[in-house]
Image (cartoon, rainbow, N blue to C red; front, side):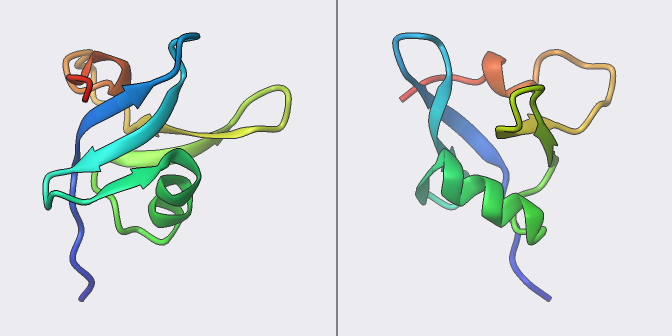
Length: 76
């Protein structure tokens, strides 16, 4: 079984887009790396969506709570 980790912090660009994520295991990944990891099931609690412009992005799995949405996480 592969180890999975949760995203605990995010880094955003001036437009408010998430550019990097920090996992609870201490590792930091670019958003493109995190998307690949999410597709491989290595990041807990997220899934990969596709925007209207075709760009892929990570989002929290729907659970009715806004507190764990990626935009609500602390920044680093």
